[in-house]
Image 1 (cartoon, rainbow, N blue to C red):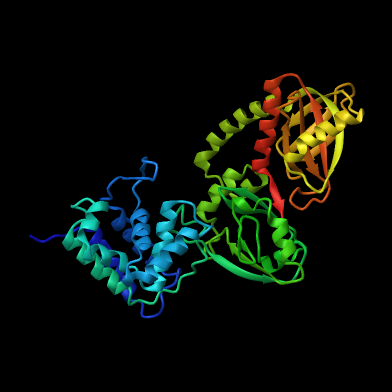
Image 2 (cartoon, rainbow, N blue to C red):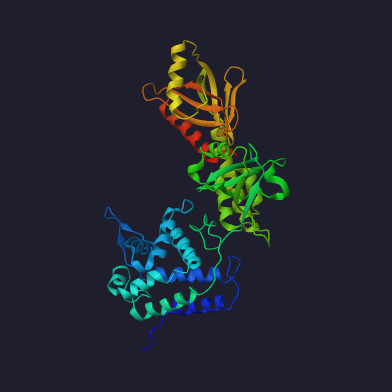
Length: 437
């Protein structure tokens, strides 16, 4: 009886198409994405449930056994072990699916994709630890067929951009990337908003070096600065990275928001724009007519919500304190105590409003604006456990990630629920904040 599997047949077909390309295979190859998707499906098929170190079940993913085999460091698979270690340490990837995909791409370049399957072929009992007996990698014959296909792939010349890894958690569809070298400068003239661990570019100063010849455009993603990966952990580090590069050329790795030929937006970046919450970015997305009715309904709902929020909360403004060059949350309690001990604390009745792009504080008696700050300038907010009726936020003289002078604004309010709501609203504002670079 002939043993076969439709996925193996499909993988053979895509491999034949790749073999037809006598030159090197790059990310522009139309068949590469289909080959990789099919191979991922082969590796995922028939995986047995597994548990983590604590004893909880993990979502089955081929990355787990590939990592296990790499860590065993079999003598014939040193190249594969090094590749798996690099996949594990890549700061642009956050999921097992993303690491599996990056591993496949690296193995294609390093010609070692066959090695882990070769180990399972030599040690069939190991294969049964990870796979159902009826799966491709669990069946001895199908595993041999898969190995022969992967050995054929090891003879091909893959030249892939391995820096292009930031969206592998989401898709096999690779975005267009550009590597730029800019002249030494103190500021790139761009602003970014962090969403889903990506630095979405929301504004480009038309007079900046980044804007020349449309090198960098709104809707692109800032991926690296001088080989420093830019992700959610970089929020407070952008100023430090730029200072470190002072007087030197700036090397950028940019993920382009639009596909070069069609000029359509790259689909995962559409999701980033929607999640950013920045209204002027949404103009980049053309809403299909079928969605317009739903959008109008949503707009009516959001208007009623905004109306409730914009009425604000009636609290008492106590005054402000200069906190120096640090604007982190640790300064909140210090600032509150400094103001109270100084004897200069006031209790001015005000209305505190959390708006779309910032906060506004107006005096209750005559509606005069006492304080108005954008979320871009606000670096922290909170209150102290010892005297919870006092709360504060800290703002810089400019965007908080480049500001050098910070001021704490202190308020008094005895309604605990409303204070919590104000602080939560400020926190949500931080999620919409964008940072100057």
